[in-house]
Amino acid sequence: MTDHIVKSFSEQLEGLSTMVAQMGGLAENQLASAIEAIARRDSGAAERAVAGDIRTDELQQEIEDRALKLLALRQPMAVDLRDTLAAIKIAAELERIGDLAKNIGKRALVLNREPPIRLTQSLARMGKVALSQLKQVLDAYSGRNAESAEAVWNRDGEIDEIYNSLFRELLTYMMEDPRTIGLCTHLLFVAKNIERSGDHATNIAEVIYYMVSAGHLTANRPKADTTSETSVPYENSRP
Image (cartoon, rainbow, N blue to C red; front, side, top):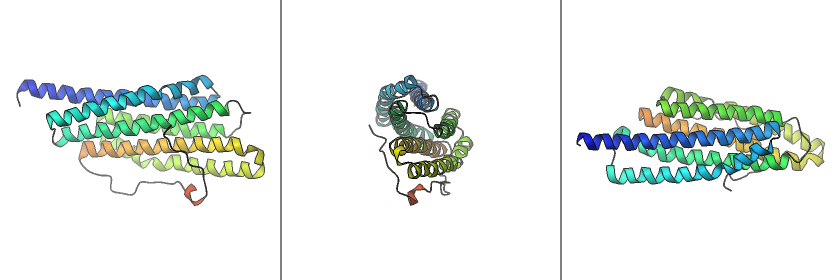
């Protein structure tokens, strides 16, 4: 390829990475607003989490369109191909995080109309861990750092342990006072959405690790969610 073509190709790849980073920032802000809505009973933050999903969805579509055009016209190879495919995969994971944040925001609007319950602080702590993982994995993407991505992957069990504890507490609440079943069900859905956000951050870590090293994280993911042994409500992250 001529110098002009090489430069143009590099600029297109950099532009794609910039868009992914921008989408990551939006998803992070959306999730932060959702967690703030739960922790502080802030309906304004909840509404921001819900409203932010529109732009997140738009960016995913733009990234996919640009990446597919790049694949068709440039036919990248090796690390360039991995970068391009990673952009598509990461954008899809970020879109799901945005959906989950929107769902948390909607639940927060309902919860904020009810009397406060102390377990929302456990949710806030769980949310902070999920936000920390998302920030770390986005930094790993920007820095093309496989080791940092692997560190996020290894932290997956941390959120699961908080979720397991919260799950048991909520079940106890419901058994002791059936009047709390409606409220606790909302909290269970919020907790599951936060836990799923952590899973998507871990998925992104796997993509980054492969993008940078061309290798796979072959060990079993350190999951610690034991709630599948108990009946639990499930909420699809789609609207």
